Image (cartoon, rainbow, N blue to C red; front, side):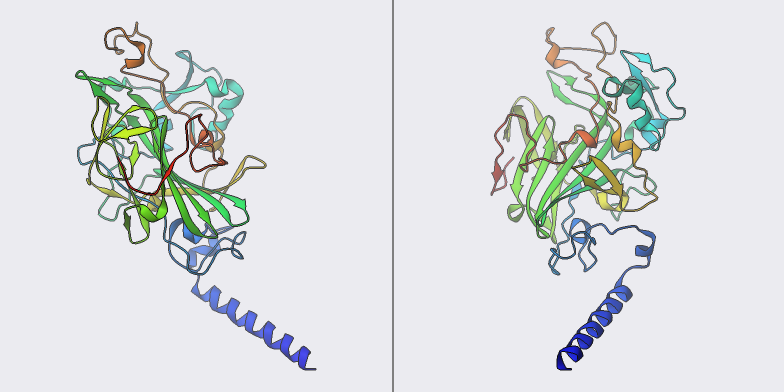
Length: 363
C-alpha cells in the first residue's frame, strides 16, 4: 500500500511539474513541431525533446553576436531574395528547363540539371554595384527586419554532443586590396560560426575565414553576457574573435600586419538569431528538418554555387596583378551550408591543416 501511494504521489508530482512547464512555454511553441535547443539560442528552460534528458537546467545563452564593420557597404542579405536576382548557369550558359522563378522551395531541383556545376549567376552586371548586393543593415535591436539573413543548423551527435552551426549570408564579398587592386571578389558569401556543446555547455567555437578559419575555447572568448562575439571583416566578412587588423596571407597563421589584411571594428551589432531559419541535421540520413514547419528546407540540398562562375581573363571585368592568375579580381561563388562539413569530427573542418583550439585570443 505504501509503495502504491508513493507511486501515486510521484505521478501527481510529475503531472504538476508538466502543467507548470506548459504554462511557462511561450505561445509560439504550439506552432512548432519540435523546439530548437535553448542553449543554441537563448537562456531558459525550453529544450528540444530529443535532448531534454541530457541538457542541464542551467543552459546557456550561447548564440554568437556579430559586429559588422563600420565602413562595409555590403551587409547581411536575404537568402531567398538572392534568387530573384540570379539565373542558373553552367560555363556561362543558362541552364535549360530550370524552374522559374527560382525559390528556396525548388532550388534543389537544379541538382538534376547539373548540380555542383551550376552557378547562381547575377542577372545584373555586378560591376555596376546594384542595390541588392548591399543587403540589409541591422536595426537598433540587431535585427535585419524583413530579411532572413542566417540559418541555424543543429547536429545532435549523441551522448550529449551537439554542434550548432550559425550560417551567415551576404549577397556580395568584396575581397582584399593588393597594390591598389581588389582580389577575390565574388557574388554570394557564406560565413559561419560553429559552437560545440557537451551536455548543453559550450566547449569551443569555430570562426570561418576565407578557405579556413580559427577555433577557440569558449571560455577565452569576448562575450556579451554569455554570447560569444564575432567581428565581420570589411567586405570579405571573414569572422574573427577580436577587432583590429588580421593578415591571412599564410594559411592557418593570422598575424596583426601583412600583405593581405582583413579589417574589423565595432560598426553595427548584428544578432543573427533574430532573422534566422533553423533546422536539425541528421548526419546518418543527410537530411534537414525545420524547427518551424513554415521554414523552407529544399534549398539546403542545392549542390551548386551561390554566385557567378569566375570570369575568364578575356572578360573586361576581370583583372589580375602581373599576370598572376591567383590574384584574379573576381573568383567563383561559394557552395552553401550543406558543404560546410556539418558532421565534422573536430571543431575545425577537415582540410589537411592542423586543428588548433586556442585557449587565448589572437588575431
